[in-house]
Amino acid sequence: MTSDATRRRDARRPVPHGPGVPTGPWGALHAALAFLLEVAALGASWYVGSRLVPGAGGAVAGLVLAATFAVAWGLFMAPKARRRIAWPWRPLMALAAFAAAGLAAAACGLPLGVALAVLALADTVLAFWLRRKY
Image (cartoon, rainbow, N blue to C red; front, side, top):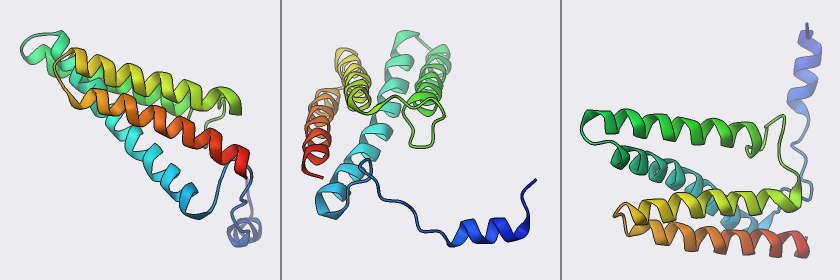
């Protein structure tokens, strides 16, 4: 059990900025693009799942596929994940997940899926560039 004094002391501590948290306009661009890609990949996975099964079952399949994506992302890729993938592999795994979701959506008839895959590649390049710069 944590005391009230410990909670107050922890609340006053500044958030650390380490090598994984780039600052400045390029870091902000990377953070915003990464968030938008996560949301787009979640939507693309729902779209793909909804197209796999005809009728009302498609909505359920879409929800199941999107939930699976969200749980996997939360377990291994989220910033506060306990089993977070280490640095050189994390942006590559994100690229694989986003590109797979985008290309699967494009194969199911959603042309914006290709844009998702291209933006995922751009975000990965930006992540490696920021890591090298900072």
